[in-house]
Image 1 (cartoon, rainbow, N blue to C red):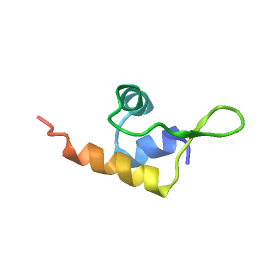
Image 2: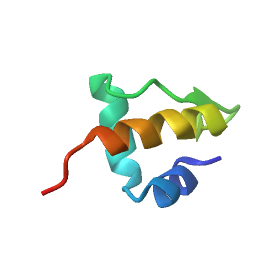
Image 3: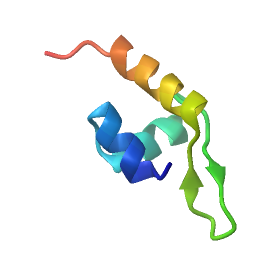
Image 4: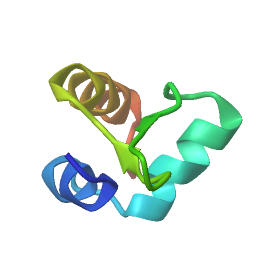
Length: 57
């Protein structure tokens, strides 16, 4: 899956995922031959779990 697909599923922006990766809140994504981030189901589940831990106001 692409970062855009994952972001749509989780309900956040792709920039948020990149920011979480940079600060170490979620693991770094694997990259394809073009250098684009690619995610599998396990990555998606980890991002979803982290998203659920955030308290929204």
